[in-house]
Length: 298
Image 1 (cartoon, helix red, strand yellow):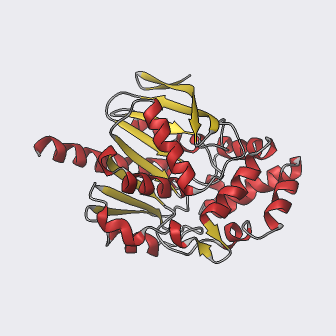
Image 2 (cartoon, one colour):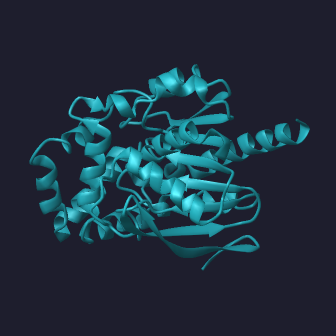
């Protein structure tokens, strides 16, 4: 186990049955205090949070979940739609008997956080959206191409080979990071290992197709018009040079959130919590500290 100050990151697994599908979900947990749930993006895993998790665990019990199909969770043949994955997140919280939680989501994970907050508003205490999906139609062309018939299947066939898996990992690094030399080796090697594992690329393509088309994010997955009904404190964090989702999504969304705040991370891309973890952790801690103080004085 990795030491986190006076605590440790513990690795665990929980079995669930969701809509008749048997799931085995891997997660990491550390710290003590109010619960936070961290939700990774498309094609990623809970490992992406390891650069901010220790700092957040100083004041919270932090759970980092591998969504079905990713990381060390199993890879069943399931819909992989945003609605299904949101149901999985709710079932995970039920299994751990977490009734009130702060949600932190990156990209796809941000979309799931928003959907859960809209479906079960009393369950969510605060939200942090990091370069979140679900806030507009625009999305990078390489992701949209995965939705085309045949293209995703070619990606699966090639990238499960050893050279293809390295191409997948390095290609993701070039797209998701503003400065490729900042890509951590553990993150890169995890992508390589996942690409070689059965079912991961299939889950990635299926999840992409569930959330977008060739023309961008699916209309039903764009929640911008529903943001005014989210009344919990919400921090929107965005990498200044995100190549996947445009920065304007952040500005447009914060204007619609009743308790929205914006933090732009200079020089960062789509994964600022990996590329600039100290800056992101500082923004999240400031936000949560103010939120806790406001709750105490209410």
